[in-house]
Length: 349
Image (cartoon, rainbow, N blue to C red):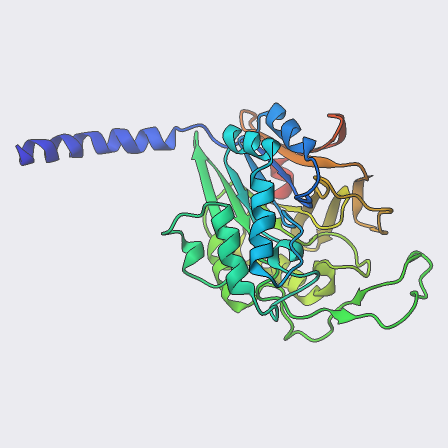
């Protein structure tokens, strides 16, 4: 009897594997950041209305800003209890990474003393499985591979808090450059031993980018492709941003697009690099938060959008050259940004 069952299993295994490969491919990813747990969040109901395959939180998912773990847990529970969050959770998978306010403290990095404890609260909120690799290493970086119809979409979620060195505080009033009409908080690191991701995460990321994939969506709490503006961003670690660009070139990783948050407005930025295709960065930041102005950004090609909103990336896999549509939808369900590129234009020739 055991032999018969084993024989049947061997016969069915190729069929099962074939069924897995032909499963529907992820083609619509919604994302957002910066939602205050005490405020109504109608943007989440609009996400449900648009029926994406998943929703990705990109940080400041709550405004914790506390070294009291019971207070942080209370704020997570406050978000979890919201009817609009419950409707989102019922409608689709929810994934996420963090930024500073849910990590624990404004603009904090690797020296935040409770980062192990806040990691556990984060993983609990996102219902991370007990056997998840996220629970086996420091930090919360992770990745997902979605396959179907001979195509692969990789979603990589970075941790830009756990390992990041402190920022360099700007001591001046205003820059001599007139475009900075506001006081600058930080200025770029000049020394290359300062880090954004840390060696452990960089090593992991090289392995991820070496995997075959047609399109790679990389989620980061901090903006990647923008020009320096004196606030938090990868631009404060120019050698780390260059390391990312060099790693994409080294691994020949096709189809990298960043999705980011943090700044309380939406925009699309385009970073040009010799020997590499353009690196687009779609910022969706404002589930509830807003800001008074958008900073100068010479890499901005769309936006800014100052109203509350969410981001959406849609891939048309049916075309011979698949297209990637980047959108921002505001709280009144108006499409405010649409920028579409063929996959071939963000791939190595």
